[in-house]
Length: 274
Figure 1 (tube, rainbow, N blue to C red):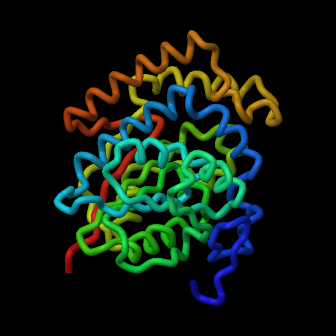
Figure 2: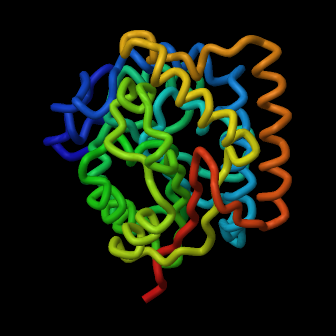
């Protein structure tokens, strides 16, 4: 380990100034996410879509492709990837608060603290994932460029982001989102970073009318202080119904279709071999 790398709570820290928190993400969200992720329909459905995407696009000719998750948070996605027993995993998060939870879930996975805009890697990974991360960072293009540097030639990146500016709501503000993306904007930023698009699809498509109506209603009737978690706080029945609706999206995406609209957007791109 180089002498200039700081260790905090047992984690290698490449950007220690960000370790205790930053303006891009409220650290108190990690506790809320840890409690909600495993039961909430959106997190569960997104995980299944992510896992299927890696199986489809990641070349498994090598025994265990090396996969990095940027902004791994509480380790919820990493935990599901680890259960596949297909990959050598590294999790990276700027906040120690998230890494504590990730370590509790995955004590044997390499977890590091670093700035997503300046990843401490060059041509090391077969795949990189960033799942609802870059919308929190003002310099999202710097994150994508940094991901490209971390990828081996021919490696892939899988990104998910919130979609459609007309869905902007108090939930985005509470989560400190900088933006919601259009498909054209995400494609352009990946291309500018030197990454070639392989596939792009929306999801949360079946539920989009419900999502829009809910956000419009809440925008008009709720104070800012009340909006923070309303999309997470679902009744058990509503959660089951939404989970069933998401299965429609998953089936269509599993058939290789690119859904044109939805609350979220998934893109797969690769680093050219030359």
